[in-house]
Every structure is written in C-alpha cells, then in structure tokens.
Length: 275
Length: 336
Image 1 (tube, each protein chain N blue to C red):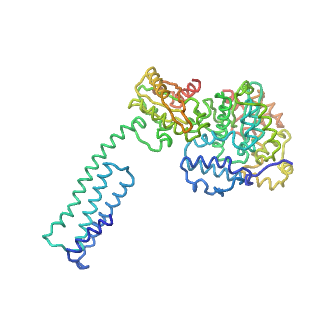
Image 2 (tube, rainbow over the protein chains, first blue to last red):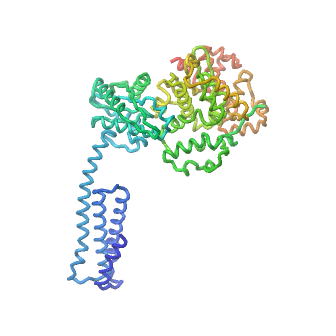
Image 3 (cartoon, rainbow over the protein chains, first blue to last red):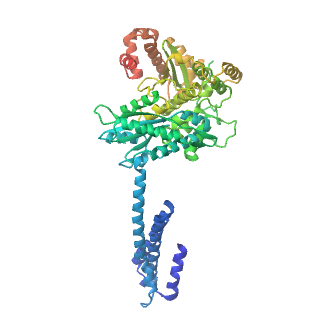
C-alpha cells in the first residue's frame, strides 16, 4: 500500500506544480490524509481477521480503493494540476467506486452471516453469549443450558447422552485423543438434530439435548436414533480404531412450578448413571 | 519426635504432579508466563529437581486462574492416580481390592497425594474416606477436594472395571458448576457438610478387582518400605497427633516439643500454613464429634464426656462456635 501511494504521488509531482507552503489548507490535508490512513487500517484489519474468500476480497478492495482515492485527493492540496487534466478526476473517482465495492461486500457478508447463523442455530438457539461456550467442542455449556431451560415456556424434552467407557479412552489413548472423540461425537450429534434443538456439552463426556415442542416419547425415539448413529461411527485414533457407544436418559422438562432446572438435571443424571 | 515437613521445603519431585499440571495447562493453551508467575519454578529443571508444596500450590492456583474453566480441577484429578512415584504407584495399580487400594493410598499419602491427606474409617454399615489438609491452602481447598476425589473415583473405576456407588459430602455450599460433580464423581452429592468425605457401603471393599494381584502389590509395598520415607506435611502430621490425643486436651507447648520445635516456631509455622493451633484442634474435635454422632448414634452427653467437657451445654456451645451449627441441627441434616 505504501508503494501504491508513492507511485500515485509521482504523476502529481511530475505534472503539477508544487503549491507554496502558505497556501496549504491544513484542515483538508488532515481530513483527506486521515481518511486514507483509516481506510488502510480497516483494510489490514479485514485481511487479518477474516479467512480469505469473496467477502474478504470485496471488503479489502473497497477499502484499498477508498484509500487511494483519498490519497489522490490529498495530493491535490500539495500540487496544482491544470483544469484540463482528466486523470486527476479519474483518480479521485476511486472513492465513490470504493464505496460501491464495499457496499457489495457488505451485502455478501450479510448473506454469509445468515448462513453461519443457520449453521450455529443448533448450538446456540435464540440468544448469543460467547462466554458460555466450551473450548473443546465449541458447544454451549451447562450454565447456558440452565438459562435456556429457565426461558423455555412451552412443552420441551431434555435428553442426556453419556459416552460409554470414556474414562478408558482418556487413560489408554491420552486426553488429547479424548478431546478428539468429544469433537467427533458432537459433530455426529449436530448432524442428526432438528434445527430447533439445542446441543450442549453438559460436563466431561456428557452431552445434553434440549428438544423444544417434543413429547417425551418422541424425544426418547430421537435419543435412540442419536445413540444408533454414534454407534455406527468409526473413530480412528492414532493407535487404532475406537468403538463408541452412548447411553441416554430422557425426561419432560416443561416449566412446572416448584421444579427447578437443577432438579430436572439432577434427576436425569441419576437416571443416566443407572443406565 | 514426630517427622513433618513445612510447605516451604522442597519435597515433591518436579517431574511428577507439578509437571502434570504444567502439561495439562499448556495443552489447553495457557501461557507459561501466566502459569509460572510468582512460583519461582524453573521449567527447565533437571529430572531430580524438587518443588516445595507451597510452589506447587501457587502453580495450581495460576493454572486454575489461567484456564478459568470449571472442569480444570476434575480433569487434573483424572490423571493424578496411580501417579508415577515408583513403588507406591506400582502397588496401587496391583491392588487386589478397594480396601487394599485405600490402605495403600493412606499409608503412602505423602508421596501419592502430597497436598491432601486421605484418612480411611469404617464402622458398621459404612466406610468413609475423608480428606484433611497437608499443607493448608484455604482458597484452593474446594478445587483440591474436587481434584483428589476425582482421582480416587477414576482410579477405582479403572482398576475395578465399574463405577462404584460412592456418596459424597462437601464442606462447602453447593457450587454453580455442580454438573462437573455429577459427571466426574456421581449424582449422590451433599453440600454444607462439615467435612469432605466419600462414603461407600462396606461390601464393596473386599470384592476382587480384575487386574489386581495381591502378590505383586505386596512385593511393591515391600520395595516401598525399603525406600527413604517422605515425611507428612505439617498439618497432616498435626491432625494425626491431635486425633490420637483428642481426649487429653493437647496444648501448643507440649505439641511443639513433640514436633521438635519451640512453641514460637510452631506458631509461626502454623501461621505460614494459614491456620493456628486452636483452629486445628477444633477441627479434630468437630470431626470426632460428628463421627460419634454418625457412627455410634451418640448423644450430646456421650460426646461431651468423651471429649472431656464438663457438661453437654458446654459442649453444645463449643460445637456451635466450631461449626456455626448446633449438634441437633447438624445431626438431623446428616440423617436426611
């Protein structure tokens, strides 16, 4: 960008005549130069924080062109250019062009965000709180689940799923492999949920699925399906294949006066321990 | 004279539990600078290096803060036992039954669990493993208890091949992260007790364990007896001492001379461990009183007589001061 700005300054220096220092308008220099610098910074932020792709390129191109246009505008303050020179106006037109590109980038970004939100829906449901996410599986945690249960008004079912013999995987293959198993199982579960369902990592190797609008029998059926899908999975550890099976417990979790989410969860934990 | 070790004396091999904590925190993306801050630990120390319990406690506190996740203490506990401390660890892996494993753990606590001291008690119809401080760390106590209870649960599940029906009592209010207790320990939890204990029905104590070998365990234990003894932490040694003499009204001066130091030194050492003599004595008396209530169904009169109080009213007042509760309310709580 520094190279582009230097190159852009060259025709001005060559074709124009330098204005004397006392005629420089310092306010214009500051505002146009400042815009160029800010646009450069935005461009770097976008490139640094987003993965490469159409949206990133459009946003970056928009900022670059705004930067160059403002820089050309700023050069005007130092060099007098003849009224007949059109190339100078063309360079300044980079600003509106950049804004158009940026707008297009924003529209694409919006579409991308809608896709991502759709993708995240099974993980977060209704409201977003980035602190409540587990670092290993990127799923919501038990605190988030309790908050959701408290917000839930209609009929809903809650399923707990436990990985059989997970402690043995940790002991025999190490905790890093255990983490990979958790990630694999969470992906498998996500693929088999409705878009209204919420998958959480309750703690350790225990997952919780909140299924709004489902009666207990249907939820039990869905839980059995989830267990069957995980049992079909093949997990390849460094030292060979690991068979994965789940056990589950299931209950109605509707808001009943006097029955707190903590009580529902404690009951379910007792059930899954006994399963 | 009683052998003991202060929290500031290097006594824990750096490549054992401290290395485990460091490795786990690094695997969860914690920076070394945050983990080692203020501990005075050298991450490049050679294999023979020793770490003081106080340094290990600082390291743990840093790791818990840096990871800021409710499962840290439980995940650390999963890896804690049998440990890699030569003969005692080998004996633990070979333990033929739960009773044998708990006996090994209690006998070799200074090497296997240097921060908390497990004690094992049985009475008719119940067996209990409860945890007392070795080096004192009031702020870390809940995390240490979670870590050590998880370690024992995970070890027994691994060696016994099944989940044992433990029940848990905690000397704390119910935490926000109770889900971690549910998954890593079990669903039979009770909070606001006066002690940190794991209870189990005695019929589980003598079931043979699939991978156990009494012969190999005995050989490993004999090897362990031949190695130089590692003394217990000051608070663990003091607890044992006071428990033995709880009926004889132990005093600081006599205790100090039995521990081979002057009363002023013992006082200063206890202050460094975050406690004082009377608090330790009161804790022992509370535990004895609770044990009598619970195991023998004793009443206030009997406990007062046993502990050398003039009368039940006097005992009742003291008990209220130790625990904040009257014996009656605590007994009804235990029964519920």
